[in-house]
Length: 436
Image: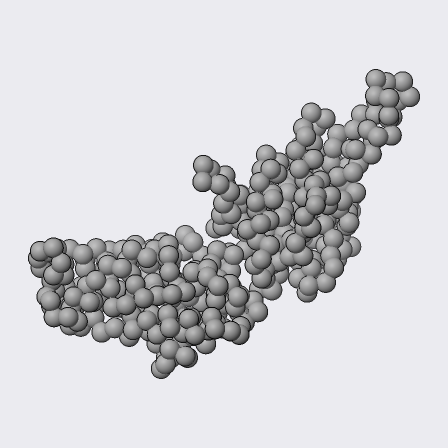
């Protein structure tokens, strides 16, 4: 087999299995019997073949694959390999140029792997158990890597490749997948976090994101519309602003960010969560995403600074002020309980103080929030709004309790659980569901 002749599709994360299977296939096709290199005997070849079967089944458990696991494995390699062709096709679709010939050259090789008949190899090594992975029925466990929709789509892609009669058709099918879902971690996941180790800064997928939608947040129609209008413009490639969602605790600011991650994922929006201590890594993060065809929101939850914290200076430079222009495909969304983000004291405006330039001190502290073009206020609900949230959630979750008793118990709950807020209303409903 010709895996060493690949040009564009190389350096696979799980490429060891491909290499081992190729060696077994080559030995069989050349009628060398067992691997034939360095005196490997039949038992060594059988052991390697069994190892490949083991790895395919482990991959099925990890990724949630079913059906022909060899085909699913190959499809997974193709949809995760970030190269000049796949990255060019993501979201935009087919591209022009010589790269198409190089990509087709590799797809020809992959189709050889795809169409390979394992019958002679199974007979030569006397390993009929390979049939287990040719029609594998998965357990009910979910994928540890993909959401259910993406996992199903990769399995469907593996089946679709079987229907493609030529490498050209297989390439077209793969290109369509790139256009619909993207490629690699950014294509197949909605949200990410940052990790920093001795090798540098890494953007890692968050595998379990809450399935929150904007309709799940009762009320707050005006704040939600301001957020969606700005995000809609951003996704459509129009001018958009950095957003600051501020206000009382438990009012749904963070839930709104999670909701837009779900709402606009299909249109190429991705969310990267960043914490204060990681602001020094922001330039490196932006350098890794600025040339991709997705729209990225860098998300900072519960953002605020004390007087002695200087991390906000890094954020100011990244948002606006540094020599390098912020890429068009990057925005910054933050949530905070503080309107001005940085702690302010009455002494900042006192006439007599050690600081000779009082106005300069105030402007320095306000300069960060001024870099957010859109600020959206989320206020705590009044008693009537709180009761409406409780009634709506109770109906949504099927809580069976007379309305008068429901509201009476809800009023008792909020007095000892954080006051009037959407969060306390949700916690109250969860409490009732737990009792049932």
